[in-house]
Amino acid sequence: MVAVHHHTTTVDGLEVFYREAGNPADPTIVLLHGTPSSSFMFRHLIPLLSKHFHVIAPDLIGFGYSSAPSVDNFDYTFDALTAVTDHLLEQLGLDRYAIYTQDYGAPVGWRLALSHPDRITAIVTQNGNAYEEGFVDSFWAPLWTYANNRTPETAAPLRKALELDAVRWQYVHGVSDPTLLSPDAWIHDHALLTRPGIDEIQLRLFADYPTNVRLYPAVQRYFRDSRPPLLAVWGKNDEIFGPDGARAFLRDLPDAEIHLLDGGHFLLESHLDDVATLITTFLHRSSGARHAA
Image 1 (cartoon, rainbow, N blue to C red):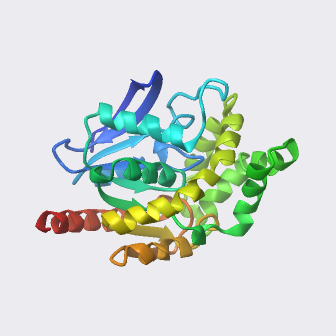
Image 2 (cartoon, rainbow, N blue to C red):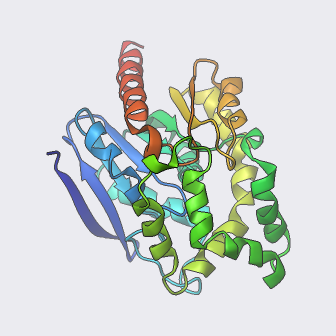
Image 3 (tube, rainbow, N blue to C red):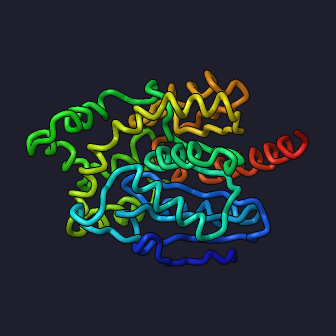
């Protein structure tokens, strides 16, 4: 049985929860979760990766078991989420690491890479967008509307997105056999979403999301300039970030590995072993290539 440690530490005056496994002497990979999940989404992946790597999986502020101060006491922007994550990694003494980015984890990961390009050894992106082609219009239209005009009326569809049926949809859509999925995932996420004040936190982050899109040109320049090894392993049936978002990485990183699997947004729930194998093979290969270079 693999030992997975569950830590809480103080960063910038806030409690940050993170999971850790593996030998710290091995190469590190930082797992950055999406919404409405937390590091809980990596509960089965961490033991598989920790056989080969040192694994760190934090909960972003406002998610999981990390602090969730009210919107009056914390600036819920992706810049702010990244700052706390960055300071956690520095506190842990991590100055070289690969990143796994999914959903909200992607804009956090891109900001880390832009701030510290020398620290990023490789990138795994699993339905984590860096190109406008990845947006599925039917899903994103209400968010763009709200971000441009924040009213109770434009917020209403986004509040619906925090309800149990909508959270479940994010897990089951695009999965050919939903009976393979444990309801623990969406029940857990929804339980944390229903805590007092979390809805307002989510709305603040929805409103800030366009800042991620405005960052894309800089992220794409980083890809071209730094040439990080990149693996895009994507649920091709995702109706949030579509497969065109995975293919787009080839524009700036022609050597990127692209794998489109027959799954949805939370691919680890249906294709855990496939994803773990792809990551392990990719990281071993990219580490050898960089060492040779």
